[in-house]
Length: 353
Image (cartoon, rainbow, N blue to C red; front, top):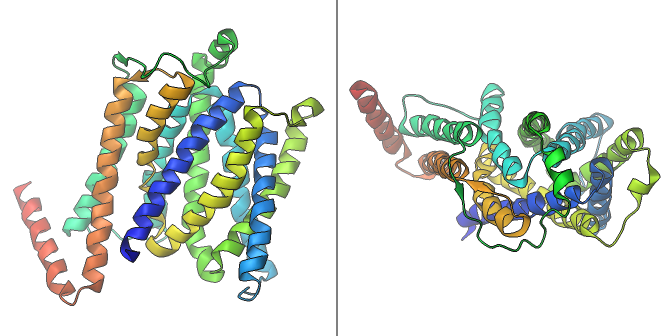
């Protein structure tokens, strides 16, 4: 069961992110400020994580030097404050499905960064190495299909949409072609920052292994940073007021469940399986988001979205299979023979090509 825990964790993480895309999109369409949203979200996460960290890890706390504090501060600035603020602007200009689809650029970017920083290996003469390349290639093909091919629209799953847009004129205006392109650019930029956050976190956790306290400290830093960003960009005080609407639901969900829960689970997954293992699970949320956004937001689903999603999930399992076989090679008593066998098979494949 212990070997299956990381796989269960990434499934739960992607289900959580599906809720993030759908609920956040509904709240932003209702007029929630993107900048105050991030501040309140991080504030909610801080109020949850700090007491938990004090209760459970006060006796195992590692010494936090000024240099390490500065590293964590910059890590939070890049991967949380900057990434989330830019991401929400992109989400406001596009759709939940596009936001989820764009997130699938993370595996490619993360793999490239991890390879440069020598946190991930790639042996082109081994079967697992070839499988990794194929997995990334198939994932890229899915992203290209999603971006360039629309195809016929599929019928919505249901006619009534509980979170659908109330003002069609405002919705059409905010989703013009210019804003759509701008939003997509913001989403890719945010995902690049997030990929860097994932890779750097692998290093930081070696210096500060207390995952719960690490997550709590980052939440505190990002809450302060997000407050300063919101003050700078959101001068209308009426946009700071919280109401009993979808905005409050989004803040509570993102603060307590996404930031408070999934961030800790991601740290745990990175510690157990590495950054690329986590990043390659992102295509799963696309399939979930396509279904939920159609059910609750009334978004139109195209054939290209479905085909792209299938390709990306295929790439996901190709890379996960490679990493699973690599783990078996390291732990098995006959690892040398098995790994050499993989190399021979790969060599045969290359000769045939």
